Length: 197
Ligand SMILES: [Zn+2]
Image (cartoon, rainbow, N blue to C red; front, side):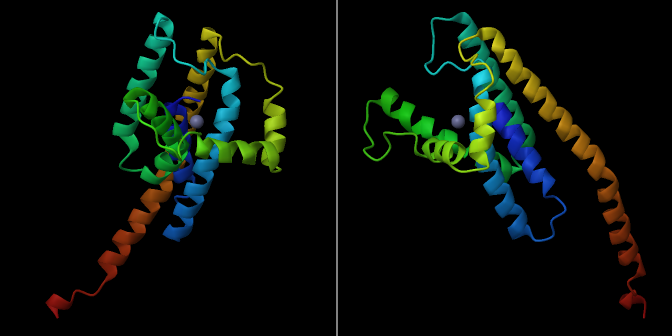
């Protein structure tokens, strides 16, 4: 899928562990699940407009990818500070394409980075290891729309749904945050004031 979809998924995953008391466990779970989410979303990408090679001759391809880039920047500005772990690990596998396309653009060769290693790991997980491979079997029944420009609407729909989930999570967490603030205020007020003694 496109970067905004990966970013939002990472944010939702990090937010889901908001109540886990141990920071180490929360961040470990966030990192693992965000990384795995990338593999799932890339398998789901078959239903969206996602041609393997760039097509700079197509006005639609260029316009769509410009909109995707702009949305990515907006999402990063809005949420990077608050959800760096979720975003970083959900997007991490796409470092593959920076290395691979970077070599093509700058005419250099990095011998150990000729393959998208992180995507290869995810591909192995989602094609060989149950229950992930079961999910892939189900996703493979969906139509392959990678070259259909109209299929970008599926990506828009997924992004809209993720934004809605994020909004609902924020609404659900608000009472919990207010409760924590009330408890903090109470304990602050009930502390004996040593200065007045
Ligand atoms: Zn990817």
